[in-house]
Amino acid sequence: MAFGTYKEVVSARATDKAIQKVAQDGGIVSALLCYALEENIIEGAIVAGDTEDAWKPEPTIAMTPEEIIAAAGTKYTFSPNAIRLKEAVRQYGLEKIGTVGTPCQIMGLRKMQSYPFSTRFVADKLALIIGIFCMENFPRDSLKTFVEGKMYSSLDNVNKMDIGKGKFWITDPEKESGLALKETHGYEQAGCNICLDYVAELADVSTGSVGSPDGWSTVFTRTDNGADIFTAAVEAGVIETKPMDDVKPGLELLKKLANGKKDKGRKEIERRVNMGLPSPF
Amino acid sequence: MLDGLKNKLRKFLGLEAKPDAEDDEAKAKLKQEMKSEVEAQSKPAEEAKKAADAAAEEEAKKQAESSEQISKESSTQEVEKVADKPKIGYIHMSGCTGDGMSLTENYDILSTLLTDMVDIVYGTTLVDLWEMPEMDLALVEGSVCLQDEHSVKELMEVREKSGLVCAFGSCAMTGCFTRYARGGQLAQPKHESFVPISDLIKVDCAIPGCPASPEIIAKVVVALINGDMDYLQPMLDMAACNLACGCDLQTNVVSKALCCGCGTCVLACPTRALEMVEGRPSHNKNRCIKCGACTTHCPRTWFPEEQIKKDLGL
Image 1 (cartoon, rainbow over the protein chains, first blue to last red):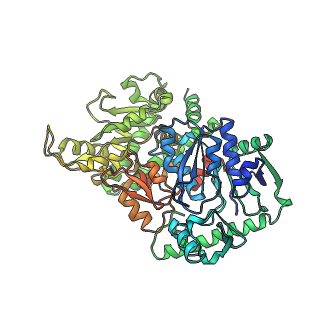
Image 2 (image 1 turned 180 degrees about the horizontal axis):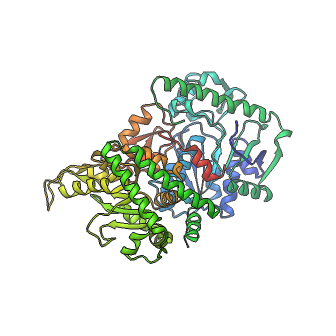
Image 3 (image 1 turned 90 degrees about the horizontal axis):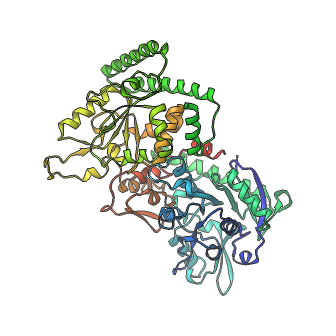
């Protein structure tokens, strides 16, 4: 069970050129949220928006497709979107909310939905939760440390970050450069080391680049709700798909990474428990 | 009628309806489990004996009543005769009544819940009764004041008379904002020590929240009726917890290398005492009311994966 429970897995991308231009990979998150917003499946979305400080995203309540697209692209640091959920419900008065998150962020939201101890009339407002594949996340100062210290650039100059083909990539005005991923190891937050979820197993729909060619994303539909929305978006022509069997590198690579994260996580949990430290998993 | 209501409840909670036969089975199972829970957990021999006696008495009562036609009408006396509905008491100690109000926010299900599914056999303003009767479950809202002999006595009586005692809301579970009391108020200035009820009696189950949300209350009620002990387990596990504040997040999560920066604690905090700074919860102790919502909601303190998958149909 490397991928958790899912209904269907496909390779997909947004058909909208405006989204393709700014998207990290296939633009699935932007396209799905925009589609859901336009179809009134959601009334707003909580996304990782940019701030004045480079690579310091902040949870942002997007009320228009433009605002969603403005937040496109992966930020390899924290944007705890959950923290604005109450505000979106109570101050913005949104009854149907979409959001996007890493696997651990989705665990927090799902736990809140199953056990809503302290979140009066919030849990039922989440209409669409999109998960993104995640191996680990970096504190912003970690990014700064290796972007400056090992890649001789600065966060202010970096236009795009990406992880792929074994490297951490940055694009700045001068060049594109890559740093071997093992050089970034040890800079991830320690909480990631016990995580067993690579492919956001509890999301409605989860997506990420691994398994699909450049410019495309791998997409798992999981819940009934998630599958309905994704299918409708495909039928509406907002998203185009290809069978996973037709694309390279395909599911095998994804499986390797997903199982790799589980194995590593279990080992770390064992190590910690042997020292008398706690673990929820 | 009961079945209709159960389906209504499930619909309200977004759960699928189950065949009815299963429900009866589940209900029987719950009774068994509730009983064994009481027996297993009562530590002192005296208490165990009392519980066993109470169970035997209940059994005898049930046998006597099984031949009687159960009346649907809900006057107090008749309600006491109905054996197969759980007898619930609501005990108000020191708190703001927020949890009780939260319960009443389940408008859709409340009237049928109160008349057809449970018997409220005791409760200030709810039941016209001075003597505390035997109860299957006592919901205790509010902390207990050590200087108030009446409260202390009432709490002791609750433990004696009730099969299960539930700390209902954060004041009962952790002391919550009443922890900050320092006396000096009319009408009794020496009332200053307000503590979680688990400081004085054994608690079987806790529902934190300031207040506990209407939904969690409805979910607990449904779980009780269906005998869904898996759902209730985290609340049984939390029964002995009587410490909770933002500091605990630092101690038990961040300082234990568990925090992943997801922000669920900030979402849960009812007083905005937490904010995320550099991806970690930063705790403003001047705003914290020690309700424990942050620690309870954190996916890195305990994580109910099976329950979530069940709820999502995964």
